[in-house]
Image (cartoon, rainbow, N blue to C red; front, top):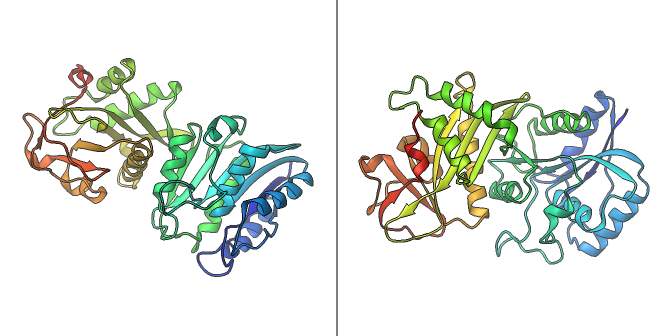
Length: 361
């Protein structure tokens, strides 16, 4: 079966490193080499986009499609595709999957509020029939912040996130080839391509998470070998607020957990990061950093006020964590107990983790 891809470009000038125009040649060439085809319609007035006109144009495009398609959109084009599917459906088209490349999450804050383009509040339920959604975003995107990818991951439980470096907003310098690999994987019912996929854990992941956690901490000098038991206890007590896995080549290679903490001054909305683990064979490949960034963005999107972690200041400092005077963890040197406030305010007093952290290995 021929891989058919519908690509919707973004807003603004299409030429240049930030536009969608530079993506068309590598996408078309890569898909043709893989035996596929690319349909890339020109959307009306991209420098002054209006939802009614783009909706009408998309309606005309979908009316002419038949069979099985992978849908892809860059920047505004990705957000528009989701909105159209949520509000209008796909008609006679069988949607194999959706790829969002550097897509903004309209309504994320006051700076990202384009009239008419916001998704309906219940869009996750409306998109339940879409088998897979892959969110591709550059950590170095200077146009649409990486935090927007976290918003999509927070609202779409079945979505996977692939984080990239070095391709910017326009997926330049080989970014087009990376997207082709993702599109081919979507069309072939495959899991993914080169970058690790970040997604929420499922019940089927529990054994793999336990195995990789034990392996990752087996030789850690400060581990009591209880990390896997802690995760299981958190899960059993419904206290695993957020549990993300990194998957590569169909294998779970990393995991990060977040759970609620209590602060002596009564502050709410704070969470603890950890345990986090990457399988030993995949360490020092940036997987842990991707898990931390994605997890923090999902917490922010869910309205959390902040996060604490017991760990290496050099590693966690790159994400904004730092010791906070007055915020302590019993028995721990203050330079290793770090906090990151999402709303600017830092609570005061001693922090207590969930009782699951007393679980024996």
